[in-house]
Length: 286
Image 1 (cartoon, rainbow, N blue to C red):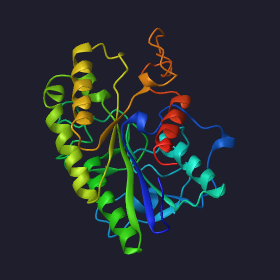
Image 2 (image 1 turned 135 degrees about the vertical axis):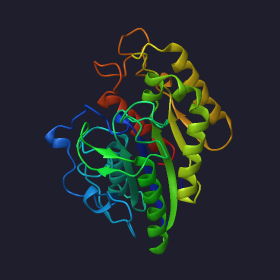
Image 3 (image 1 turned 180 degrees about the horizontal axis):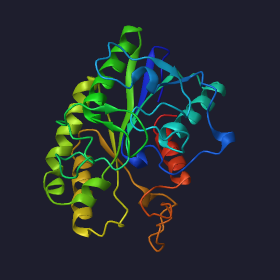
Image 4 (image 1 turned 90 degrees about the horizontal axis):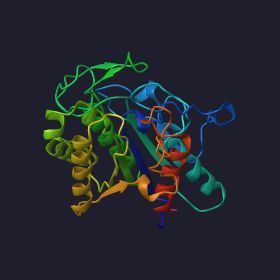
């Protein structure tokens, strides 16, 4: 893909624990503590609030840039893609600055009130904003995401740039399968309405990347199959949905308990998988 100097490419990463690489702590030497010069993100201290008039971009680091929970310095799509973009810039590829938006909290679903405290992505959830680590954090994520998306695009346009969303990555499904019941029966409608609302907030073309459900730790094969079918229907709809599918990677090994892609809990992806996600997304544009 050819970018102009006026372009402002945006990578968006939303979801639950796998969206921010739960349990994949970066070693000290791999943390990005000095802000990158060609990749920008949204620091919690300036942007984790309702009622903002504008967003504040800061040079990207691996600490403090998830507007959900505060598990920082992990291997994840945002971190890996930022490294690739910065490296390509330093190699003289002529890329414009990249802008990254991250919002995720572990274990959070999208259904209404199915599990106490575990549905912070439910669009109609009453406003709550209590920052912190998993187990303490309480944020109504959808209204925050809608506000941030709208303001971020507006901010870049006001700066004379042409914002282009590279992808809105929705790395979340586990809570729906684990909950079952109404959360699965209403999942097709709930996801459709959620994605429509996020796209409406962005106001510009917004490719959405889903993640193929692969963990069978929840022992709910019917629910897993149903949600997989729903995601596949989105991808086949022709409405700019895509699937990040680890079964098509060299990492996938269904003969193993961890399938070659999960940590010991068989739920959370390994650091190697998050590096794969970053490379896979980079292949689309670089």
